[in-house]
Structure formats: C-alpha cells, structure tokens
Image 1 (cartoon, rainbow, N blue to C red):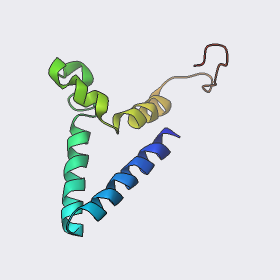
Image 2: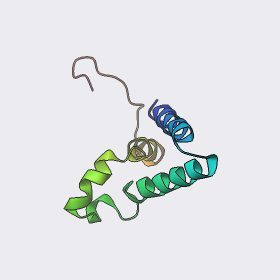
Image 3: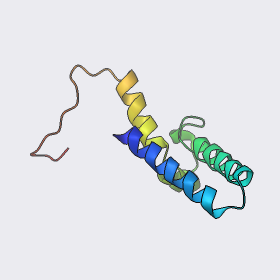
Length: 91
C-alpha cells in the first residue's frame, strides 16, 4: 500500500510537470533533479543519525523515505510473525 501510494504521487507530480512546463525535455530534467534531491535526503547516505538538525525537515518531507523504510524493515527485519492491525490500540 505504501509503495503504491508513492507510485501514485510520483506519477501525479510527473504528469503535472509535463503539462505545466514547456516541453518534455524540461519536465524530464526537473523530474530527475527532484528525484536526485529527494534521494539525497532519504536517510541512507548520509544516515539519519548523521544529518544536521537543520536538515531534518528535509528528511521529514521527502516522500521516498517512508515507503523505502517500510520496505527495508519488511525485507531485513527479523519478525517472527506478520504484522497485523490491532483494533484496540489502533496500531
């Protein structure tokens, strides 16, 4: 679900750029720059612990880090049971 939402957001942003900007080359260039910028502050290199406190807001607004954190936890986490929704705690 989380990864699907990321794909939907990225597709919507790219479609808005394609309509708003003058040409396809400009839209692709802006898209690549945005993707590179957000990938830089996603939290892998440098890690979140090494980020300066003034850059933490960039980490918080980066749309890629939420699904990739979830994906990394599901792939590399040592969970004995699958995650389930607890109705009483809403978590």
